[in-house]
Picture 1 (tube, one colour):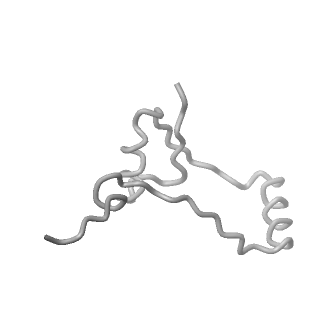
Picture 2 (picture 1 turned 180 degrees about the vertical axis):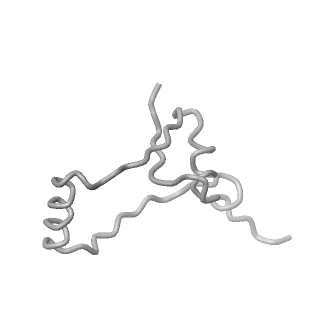
Length: 72
């Protein structure tokens, strides 16, 4: 019988990680661009109860922009 990895095979738990690879100058440039009003954010809203669908849509590349979970 092959081994069973409970997290991977049953619970489908995920880990959220953040990467800080930008410099202060990158941040300043980004904020300057934002101040000029040239940024557009596309958000796809999902009810909290559809978090599994949001993850599936992200994995399938169906979301352009960000997926936002909306609490009840």
